[in-house]
Image (cartoon, rainbow, N blue to C red; front, side):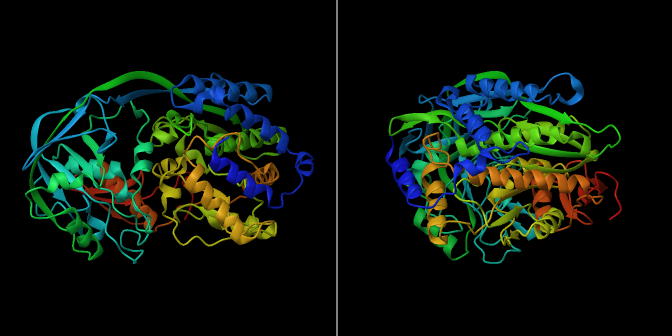
Length: 577
């Protein structure tokens, strides 16, 4: 047994945990025993971490579908539970060469000096090309900010940092990471300027978290997977800060100078004397993965509620203390188990439901929200008939929560609905100051938000029931730092299944509450909609988006004047605002 797990278990056993037997007595399909049985299969080593397109993921698919059949929950549309998604997978081989020519010649070593973030046969750069430093690599009209204003990067490799430092939440979200911090955003912007690709130099996070090269290397050790329909993309990489100085040889500017520019908010763009080439070698495959969809339908109503959870994880990776299976118990076997039990409870209450319920298990979340992105482009029920999406990804497992958080990016009034429900049930709802956080933009709910659908997460809040606040926060931080996205997120963890079952019951009752309400969630105009507008501009270079009314999304109402788009987020059910 691994040391981190031993320590985690010791800490748990020293803390009070409510009796397991009491959890087993829960009705409405929310039995802790059944949840445990689901998890013990989905997070088992025999599923090899449920990597997208792997044998383990196919075993998980079969388990989910067999369970839905056993509970008489039919497939959406009455034909098949599977929504097939064509995908491409690429793995960068160690024989790949990233070469830098400046004052001297340098051959960078994969994983030691750099990792590749975007790959494929089209990412090869067969001969040396020029380079430029483009600040943060951002063009953001809504902030009147453009790192590319004074440089021409046509055909060049661009080196960039993170994003501007600020304590003002109205400027690049202040201390939180905005959409412009994402690697894919920087690559799309650079390509729109004619660049051949982007090399990112990681710097200290806005929250003060230091760069951990081993963590970055671990995150990018897995196969890169893309929708088969994606357009050709350029080269993307992250360079080890210890190796970044190679690119600045002969420029008169050191990497330390860059860090000073960041701290003093004086980052500027300039050309570099270095040249680079990338002779990439890849193994590749084309394959089909699946979303799984089941429905509880009411023929007298055309409104849909979507409940989602992703069932993929990272698969097999580099061994850590002898363990190479990244099981993903909390991320997200536990969420899948909860959704299976909620689906069971809902079908048992089918005659009392007013609205239609779509139960959606999504693939390839870990590969860039591909399952939700594919679904919103190929919906199984009309997007205009979709009321909202509740995504389950992050279930309380340490202690029963005394309070809850609503993560919706302030893009809708979903929080108001949950606050009404909480008040009726004597529950507390925490304020979340930094709504547009990585929790919001890195989950499948965000894929639906981009399609104009109100979507959110409900997670445990800041207050536990049984444990002291100090111990509770210590355990949460220990999980995030040592367990999350590691081989230790497995069945050797101690899980408080009483807390899981209680959360399960709360979500089920909230869904019943939303089913009975005559009001329907609406979108609101706020900074998260500006973020979605920003992403639209990133994906559609050359256009500027002016947000008004309800916001912006794919399928938005637009008025186009030249290359300016005036947008108003449509109301999916044509409701009065």
